[in-house]
Image (cartoon, rainbow over all chains, first blue to last red; front, side):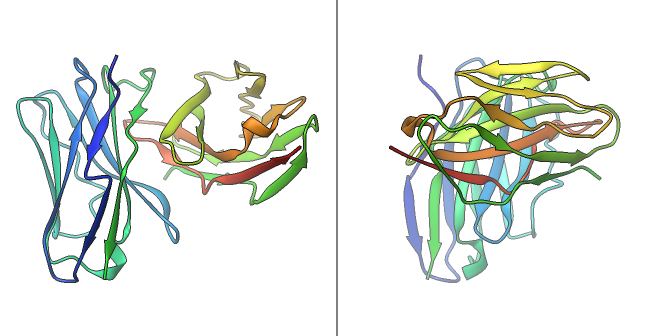
Length: 115
Length: 112
């Protein structure tokens, strides 16, 4: 079946602009995660959603970052007033549930470049 | 807090060589441990996992044993192939957290 998809695959934006990154999880997966992969910081957790529960936002690096998940499916990560240090690959993952025995399936990522 | 320390790369081996990538961890409680692989141009894929002490995860000829006494989860393969060239990440989930904590990744290149 279809895996996790993300769009766009690449995004170049000017410093100070807002960007939206989209994630389509695997159908039926109730848990959705956002991570960031950058040269300096490696792979970092940003936020996760589980069903209708309040999201765990503990990994968001600043209040310029926000995310929502509509209808328990598609998620959008928004970065406001982008900075050069936001340049990274943003990865989305989904799993059947959030219990740790469930595998997280990753999308191909969105490469964000802030100029 | 949780952390994963991974052998630094890059690692370059000849085909059919033996591979070890070291991984040690610090965690609250009893973590579940994972190895993920990222092939060139592709997304992260789960390679193997172990959820309790002394468990051995295995897949595609790769193995890793959950060693509680040494807090380690080293990845091994007896005979690597060119197609194993990728970046390998050790990771864990522990305590009440539901997100993965990753190591820094190890770039493996296998030469024919």
